[in-house]
Length: 312
Image 1 (tube, one colour):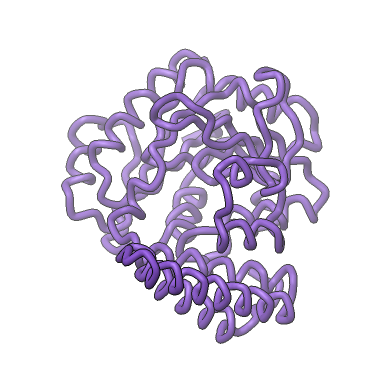
Image 2 (cartoon, rainbow, N blue to C red):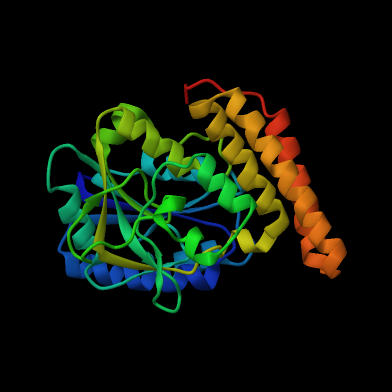
């Protein structure tokens, strides 16, 4: 198979119906785009009939059935290794691509030779803004995560969030959400794939940090609109996902900020656990007691995680 303009890689795990909607919207938009393309679905050991669905309904799609859940980063790396596009779109299966999104991403990626990766403007299921891009996380973002003071702060620039700008003009960000990212193949060749030490969560932040460190620009293309029905896979194991989130964050923060930063996060998580446990006793809310327990476990993760080096 010769080189294509674009390869789309979708990693899926037990979200059969969401994947069906994703593929239908994607294939329609790829046809509109006029780009030479290929679509690769990497299945992480689904047991809900996903491989059978893809093989039966979408015979032109390449299906890579791994037979086990190897994690988001590793499965995406498998898909990228099998791809031949000059650019690669990593797309979550719990997304729906709105008309024109693929071409807007493509045009933003080709706008200048220093642009290495472009993310979409992600919308919630109700059409409201979910994410237009982020600054690299630091202490303030963790503080607001452990102590959620007000929803407006969570979605604000103080918490590292970007708005959609004028809705048309691409703008620079530190990283997009990993649900939809289009990247040049030269970037993957230069900095490598996703770090497979992240089972899921934070792998796109680490990747974008390496991409930025190599001198590439990362953009959001706000006219490229993609609905993200967030958490389709991770909702299946919510408590496990919470702890995995903090394992991934510990890996990221230790790599990029050092052991002292990790110790401060452990202290902050323990403080949040104590405050949440007090609220649980005063209100009798079982969900607060559960959150306090999980925060204590998160604090232990930050205390015990060995620092990794900067190699991948």
